[in-house]
Image (cartoon, rainbow, N blue to C red; front, side, top):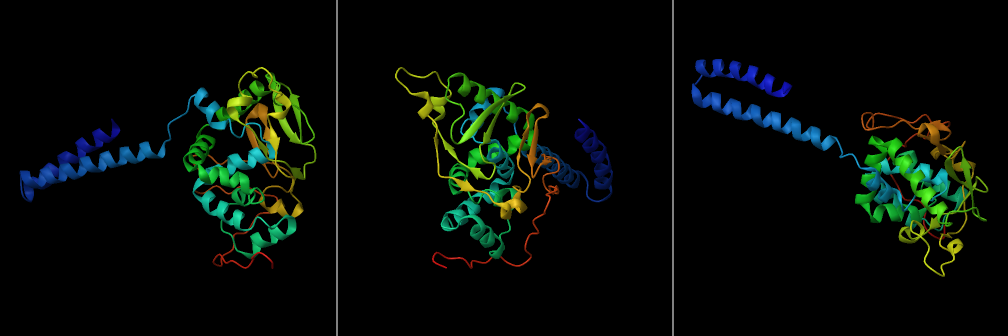
Length: 289
């Protein structure tokens, strides 16, 4: 309504200008340009505001990652808000999958990688980045939901965890500890420096067990991934995770407050901030070196 009021006021000025400089034809052209500007502004506003997802839609969105250990899940949620950087990061991680630990951290610095620290923090997990890169529409939808509906996203994770735990699929084992803390289910690595990436079929673990199914074998885990102090610059220094009752994501033990409105200018206060290289990205690490 405000836009239409302004357009009406402006049209009176254009009519006066047209009467002085060319009559009805000039007024018509000016009015058409004004309407086009209003429609463009309204369309841009619609594009900038992602559609809010319903609880069932959010449940489906987070199913594939809801049972991940809390520190890894926190990194995935924040990295998803930089969805445009994920494909390149996944490609780099695949090409350097032979590097582990300190050697990988050194390669990240030596190659002058320009991505956000939340994305760099996932480079030790090529399978996770591949999953995100292969379904870019899902990753972008998740990122928009994290920016625009963070409390609802975290609530959806909790709903899915309660379902999987209720059916017996989500339980403590030699890879993770499952803790009920004040009604919120935490999935924590037994060793904070060693992360195992789970693999499971959402159609199995979020549904009643079929006769004869051994629920304890429904969730598989990949090889151990050690996250040492050298990865502290990318969010792993003090630890990542959640304060579930307040819907807070913790990255480097600090609340992560990037939202839709500040997404272009916000810089997370890392304990040891990663200074993005000003030099161009290079490739100095190759297999066998």
